[in-house]
Length: 52
Image (cartoon, rainbow, N blue to C red; front, side):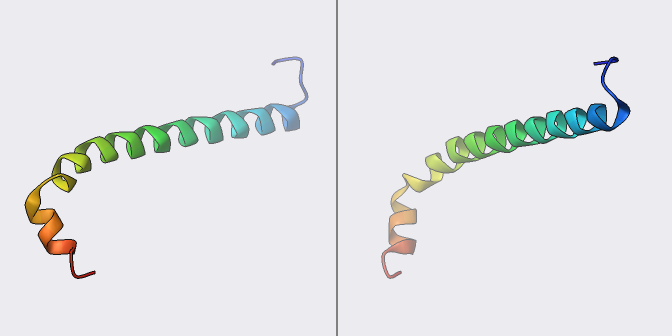
């Protein structure tokens, strides 16, 4: 990495940060789906959404 010109190091670091953010978003989505799935299975939810 140190052998790369500064401009390329910045691009590599930007890409690494992008990949980290993308991974965090996927993790958040997965955890949200798990949490919400408990509520989605309730009869009250079926009742609330049946007219839509």
